[in-house]
Length: 89
Image 1 (cartoon, rainbow, N blue to C red):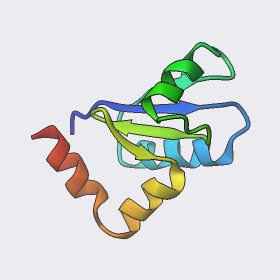
Image 2 (image 1 turned 30 degrees about the vertical axis):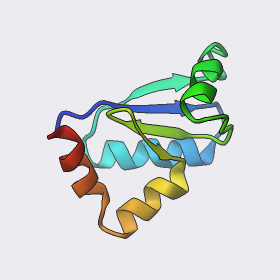
Image 3 (image 1 turned 60 degrees about the horizontal axis):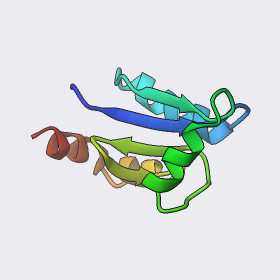
Image 4 (image 1 turned 90 degrees about the vertical axis):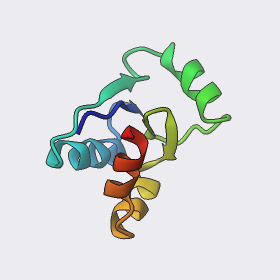
């Protein structure tokens, strides 16, 4: 699947690592914006998430999924793969 997945992360973040593990296990490429390594990304993230500060923050084709728990809910409910399909069409 050719999706535009973006994930805002920070260093030493278990939820960030788990989210990346999900994408890696599904062989999905993603663009990571690490705010610990480049703090300028936090301003962009805050604008895109309407002020959400929890990490990670995940976007698929500019659709704001939310954090790891939101991603996990999509997977557990069987909606993740259909979301990917819907967003690429």
